[in-house]
Image (cartoon, rainbow, N blue to C red):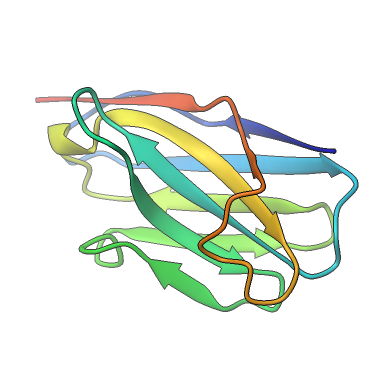
Length: 120
């Protein structure tokens, strides 16, 4: 089992920035991919960014311009730096984890999510 705990969400005005964190604990594989997805009301959900244990990254469409994913393998933590936020970025952001080589886009575990609200 793997547990994922997100933090750093909240309310921010348009144009502002936030940094999300996700800590993974439990039976962590040395080869894995962790990332962020988001779900907005009425939307199915979309990938924001994913980063593998060797540092390779994948960004969803139009995400790379304003979002940056990073990680520290020492404590199994990933970060999502978000800048120049807009109300369209309002969503629940969920941390994901999959294990094994080339596991993305599979999701083995998903966090409970954290709310990000951008006011206009």
